[in-house]
Length: 540
Image 1: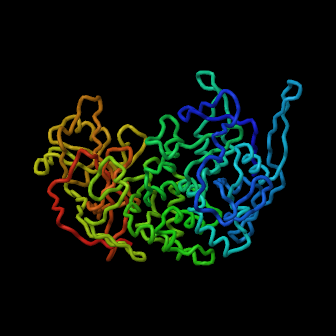
Image 2 (image 1 turned 30 degrees about the horizontal axis):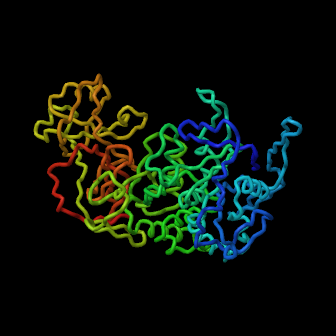
Image 3 (image 1 turned 135 degrees about the vertical axis):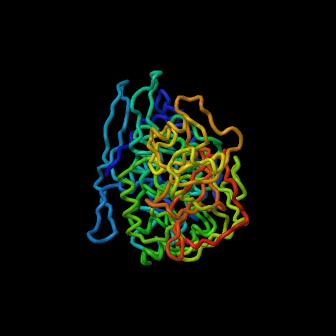
């Protein structure tokens, strides 16, 4: 695949609607002359003036790093029966040049190889040194590749900018005010956003400079406290760029789940680079058995991070993704706690309780016994079984001898609140609530499970034409949940929704299997639960 770079570059100055500067031009702000030099240097850098490889130790000024999708650097050829690919660059990349002669504007296209496009971009943005893998790593030297891949996190962490190639991003028209604009969300649809290595590169970087076909944009900076509204891409960029967010296993696996890698092992090498404790404990060798690498990676990742259990069935139906999940689970044969049979999501975790500051991203495991060794995860904590009421016929009047307020588990998949998301929903019930009776009859509900809970304060709001009785839901990778157990000792919180979430396991012979999550709205709490009653669950 070949790309196009237009030297007439517009600057995005409003991420909310993609508004760009009315006139083209590159701000001299991007020059690195006044930026401090990093004490770390890669083994090799590319000198932009002649595109020669030079030793990093001989460079005494800041450098940039390149992040791009490898298949946009030329024609990628896969070797039959192997994971190895080679790149053929036939010089079909395009640089669009502009010049005025005697007051008249001229535009022409220059066909070049990939390195020439990089050189032109660097010269336009006044970068003198850049790191990128195709030149700075000898692709034929396995030992050098192994060594440099393990250092990848440091290479991007210490770069003054990471230059991100997204040729899909370009000025695409005018906004409602008649100003030129681009669609920032094209970043999410770009080839760059489909690769797992670029996720690691973006996360480790200080600043991202997106270079599109004829437009460029700085990422949401690490100093910004909140994602910008309106553009979906800004929330994603905030997640990967803000130093206030300490990633956990679930965040990394969630963002990586739809991304691919050229080689199977690269997926785990890239993810390992995001976690210092993990990167130093696995071997970066392409000759090791893939299964051994996967098991070691997940063991290291989960060692001090229970957020790996924050997975379930995707709420938004996606047949293609569910098929991919099923195939991956069958092929990889990993322990259930890795979440390979489901989909991870963004989560916040604080075992001392849920709060609203950045400490919720840190893990405190002192209140539970938690250990991961090999394929076994051991958790000793309080729990609650999801009780099956076999004789309950679904009528509220039958609840007179139960809790005053409770949640009934429906045996049908219902919409979650007013969204298009669907899940097995817990419906709030209270004796004598005629509106809830009609709600149950409308959906043909049959209550089959019971959780003892109560509401802190007023529980029902019946002023709406159809009250919201969703008290929570189960998101499970298994069709049957007849032996469900909720692990109360581990609590998660979604960054945007007001739910407390706990892992769910089920008994399988002599051990337990992690099968998903139980979501309960924040304003409910469990009753008649003795939190001092604990059990050890061996999850495989």
